Amino acid sequence: MANEKKTSDKLKEKLFFSNPSCYEKMTEADVKKAYDYCEGYKKFLDEGKTEREFVKASIEYLTKKGFKEFDFGAKIKAGDKYYYNNHNKSLAAFVIGKETLDKGLNITAAHIDSPRVDFKQHPVYEADGMCFFKTHYYGGIKKYQWTTIPLALHGVVTKANGETVTIKIGDEENDPVFYINDLLIHLSGDQMRKTLSDGITGEQLNVLVGSKPYPDVKADGIKLNVLNILNEKYGITEADLMSAELCAVPASKARDIGFDRSLIGAYGHDDKVCAYPSLTALVECSKAPVHTCMAILADKEEIGSEGNTGMQCEVFFDIISDMAKTQKVLDAVVRKNAKCLSADVNACFDPNFPETCERRNSCFMNKGVVITKFTGSRGKSGSNDASAEFMGYVRNLLDENKVVWQTSELGKVDQGGGGTVAKFIAKKNVDTIDIGVPVISMHAPIEVVGKTDVYMTHKALAAFFKA
Ligand code: MN
Ligand code: MN
Image 1: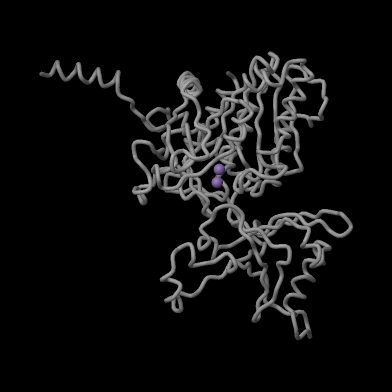
Image 2: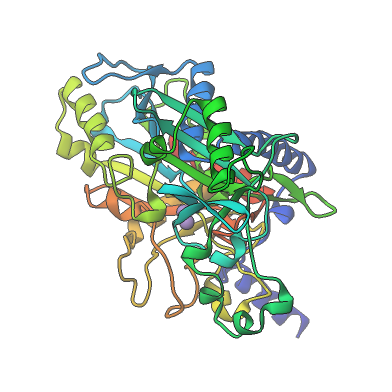
């Protein structure tokens, strides 16, 4: 009997799939490496809360690592390291491989925009002793989560004279912060009976910016005082706010979560937690890779990858076809033989809300980087749905490189779902699959990730670039 069990155990080991956690697979030294890696990530996050700031921080980082600005028509050669700054809001960084592009091109694509509260073109108004900015939120948010938390203002204003000034206020300890009011519980009888989506409406997301009137002014004195402060500090007027991109983001910095410091709570993990590993992986393999490697950091994913800074913009493939032309190889062949890891987050299984996910096909905290073969919702609608062959390629690559990984879909079949940039790259005939970090409370002002998962994402992307 005992012998028989042994045989079945062996058979199970051979035939069953098991999914150990990173902590079971990693040595103490590996874990320390992962936690150290995350210190760099946390700093980067604090520097790059908006896509503009993330592009700026990325260029500084890449420049230190020997990357140069790319111009169309550049005479590229193996080992060259470039970045292309697309309107200060999206970026492609790449290292030229030893082989020509038609032999293979390894692309990662992450997005660097995150849900937030954008200001309208006529934002400022005074009402009943307070001054507010009107907003129109950006991306999918649970509106009630953005009330009663400290907010920072980030963005740019282009003045009438064409000059653009940068505004960033609320992140430093001595900065003032901003705030969105909610109703006191004592008077919330009606509000509490509403659904979570209606409890706070879009037009109630007004950012509180002041309450002190300009001396001796009766009407709109608080608004005048606020505009005067803005004028003294930035030289702007109310009309300049029409040509501005200003937003409110959570004022807090990235912090460790838990007694064991194993988690990171921060604004904007989606998708900077994949964008940062894309950059570090690219830098790690930047000493003459076999194939050209490109890390794309796209904007506008949260609103459909639209616009000239989103993944649907042709510029990223313009760069590729420009390089193909320089190497005298066919663009169509380059794209056919290219591979892409669409690096984006997935919904981490949360035992507080188990009913939304199907356990057997969910990703879990600290079980490693998650591969998502298909996204979409209700019948895979809108999904890239990678091929078995490409899934097989990625799976073997990660195993060979001792990357801890798991697979997942995004929630139960008919629960909801979401998309990524994957489909916009796949439609260029590039084999593409989603891969990234499991996230708790995705799109909340503060999201949570596990440190080992962040590190495994770096390892996965580095293995891909080196392949
Ligand atoms: Mn995302
Ligand atoms: Mn998102």
